[in-house]
Length: 198
Image 1: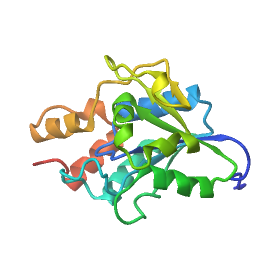
Image 2: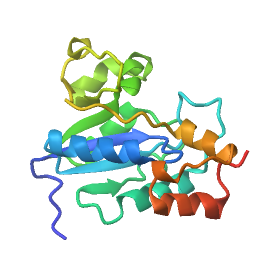
Image 3: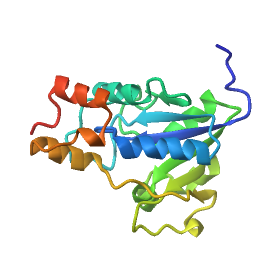
């Protein structure tokens, strides 16, 4: 396969805990790939989120396995283990700097939902993010996001689906139907691994 990392183009950076990945993640990645004219989207499961240190998280290897299943066979979508391979907390600014070195000819586009964007000021070196990348935000219904809040910010003209990983985990714990919220292959991994039972 030809290595075009030094050639021009745009790559989407889609980070998250993905515990588990669900249909809203999938829809966001697909919509924003087309909207932002992205060559591909890198789905990057976080190893250890500095914002979710109070919750027990599914092992990174299992979350990466679920993400790989979601993107399997999807053109322009790849699972990326760059944060999982790095020790300590996963900070977006560190990941972006590493990706800049891996893809020196590419423009990076950080894609996220409005809930993440509203917490951006709490992120490590948040003021430096827009110097490195464009940020493309998919608004959640009822959320107000002003494009004046950050330079290099683009608001997508779609709404994020109202699905959350915590909702899915709660449904599994309560033995409620959840399969319609995730891919079949992810549901199979959840069953095989016995995830989210308590």
